[in-house]
Image (cartoon, rainbow, N blue to C red; front, top):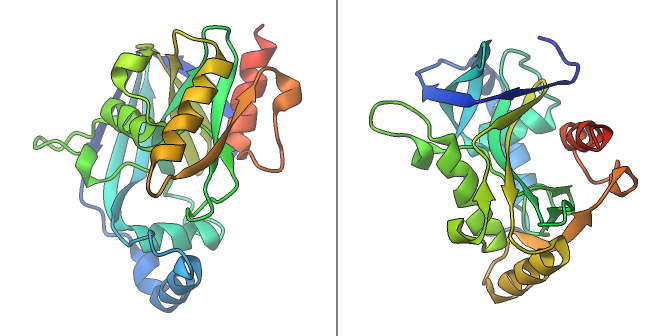
Length: 237
């Protein structure tokens, strides 16, 4: 697989979930169990549910087509912590690129009780069976808005979501972004999100950060795919 950065715009994303016999977890069960114990120590809110990983991504003109399969969250986390040892698999997720009316972006700072504590990125989550429909399709658009609501407290009436998708590939990470624009400035939006976080019983975010330009890109806390996204966005200005 190409491990370089690829960024492209598409008008449609279609996703489905299909059975897949993933051998890696079966071959690494002891490591997975020990890794999960380490990861969940002191983090009672973490639980081993089911998530969807990518087994294939393909582009057809203006369409991105994704094929997922179900795995345990503990298997997924261990695969990441082991350094992505199976190169045929990827983490593909929908993400709302939240911005204010002034064009500045708003990222979340992940809370201490989460898997990625301290990391800075837009609200997002690996898709799970809740995103699956009876016909086998995976609703990534709904996954995007659900994660925004869970992490920031913002709901669909609070913002506008663009139809276009921006696909950021840095295998084995595939981020499927849509621009999400608030009717207020980034400062006002950040204040609202902070107030929402303060009311949450177990917030996923500990804070938010405003990104106005390339000087605000944080190589220590932002994942590489997001650094690439912001560099690409700001180069177009």
